Length: 245
Image (cartoon, rainbow, N blue to C red; front, side, top):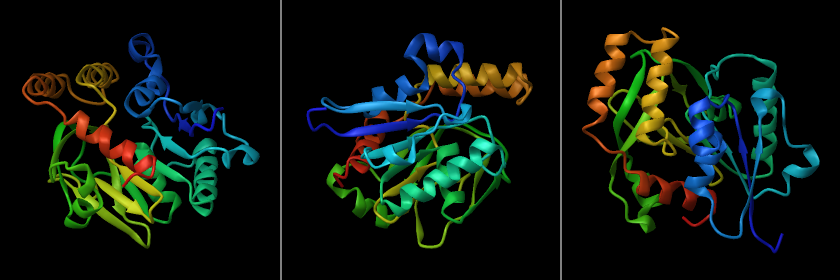
């Protein structure tokens, strides 16, 4: 091991053929954003029932929970098992970063509530406002207090867990980010996504009739005009996960 830190991606989604071919799956997308020299990164396909053993969770320095097509308020066997794992990670004070579905399931595991967003789908590049307390939290990173972020969700955090704090919001979503203690953080958007991943997702949503074709085309046209603040999000996520804030 050479004393390097060890992290795990808890993969909650099936990889699309495009993401597999282009990035080596969503695991590859996260590793590209978060991994640094000397670290070991593992993947557990939790949506397929593949979980770390109780005996090995102590060996990891941090965990990342990915997005998913499933609802965080659902009671699939693997979702209930993931909630159990997150409670263990909380008691061990392990660093956990939850993204999209991961943000919602983390909220639920800690005692909050999630559900369908009243405002419907949020797809595209959204302006996120960091709260004044989070500006202090991230002050060493020298990042702006408003950041553009790729979003693709129709569920949201409705009620925060006790002792959790909202650290970012947008016009459409009241809880874009939350923090629980110093060890757990959720982000509703997708800091790991590139615009091409989102374009492919929009196509898939149209194919499966989750969204109207006219809405999908409108979203794709808008995407050309804006860029997500990928470097700032990368800095924020790696600094949190690795205890550098």
